[in-house]
Length: 444
Image: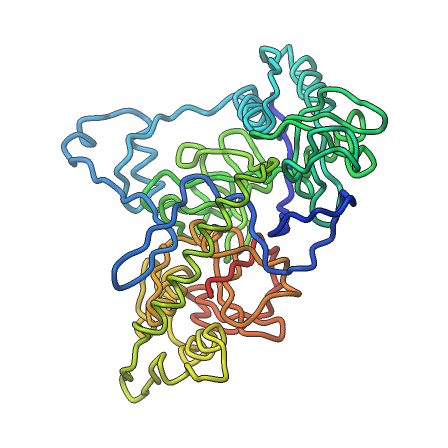
């Protein structure tokens, strides 16, 4: 279909870190450091001298001769659209049905639903939309402050807690029994109290809001343009595997949000997916928390033994070592924030990692933490899954990592961040809520 498919708003997802034996089934979090399900493709890896909290796949360069042998339209498009690319690009504009199928597939993967989408052609748009609406009606969407317990029986007294359905997360409706919904979400199948969820007609509109539509960059360096055209000005550059929140889907292009503003990228150079949070079983939560605890302990150990003690200088300016900010009375997070602040005014350089000569947003965060013995990915999307989730900006502490669409920063307290912003502004201090926050993550 020719009209934009949908606009999905970004949202913040939180989850409580412990199970309780209380009979109340909906909770507002009291422990404000929480974790959500790790993002696909991001793993923990502990090194000997440093701790790596995330990994990203390395770009593999193909031979130039192979690229030059192609004279297709897509190769020409690739030459103009990317600074450097190792991917063979097919110049095919996805049909609206492909976009719809992708979203339905993501929902089905999260909930276990089996719903066939109507085959879409230009004359069958109504059938396709009806199929999507019917799927949304089969969803059960949690609408609580934090999470609702999933029980093995439809009873607070007799039902054992087997999992959690987080706020705005989705499950598939199976049946209703005395005000309880039986659902399937991820690996969890059980009962939730209907008063804490929406389903049927009420779920149709909410389903379009609870998913976050993501564009993942598939080419080495992607140009984000001011309009949906190869002739439009370039607003900014985005590296491979970075993730951008999709604001709108057009014919062959998507509107995305980056630090320089809203812009457009060709569908030839990104893959689209929709993030839905699914229920987490008790066993899955315990395993995740154990992994996060081990990573946190490793980070603290690395910071104590590998924090940089040497000072540095650039030109006429000298910089204090990370170790000089680490004291017995202050947290390591506060030391991270104070260390980072001394580089305000230094340049932004795309792809850079130098705190003095220039870094991009994730390169800045990575290099700051590297001085405290912690290795982070050179990727704003990858930073969304490191450490443990914090329950919103109100509970952020100095040193926490604040993640945006295509951007990342370090929280310094009092509602402010320090970040490598743009080539025009360099490293600077900003209000943390100047853009929509996707996640706040805590390392220490």
